[in-house]
Length: 67
Image (cartoon, rainbow, N blue to C red; front, side, top):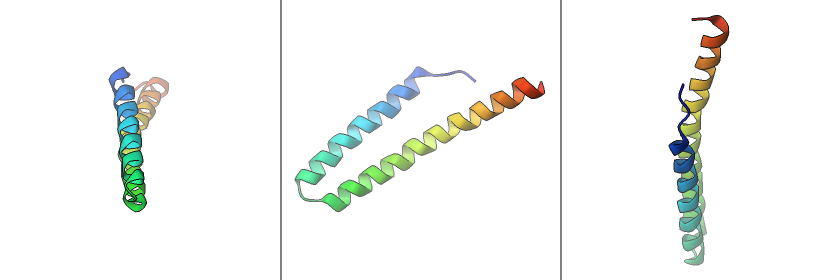
């Protein structure tokens, strides 16, 4: 498992872009769409983090079970 700093920057970039889109849509009066954009962005980031948690558990299993 190699920790990649680029992924942290990707997650931060997605968060910044989502915040900008949310602000723009909210100022346009489309609050419902703005909230859906945030929810979809959250799911995408959660999906990315799930892969890292899976890698972490596999690495812990490899270290402690000597596989």
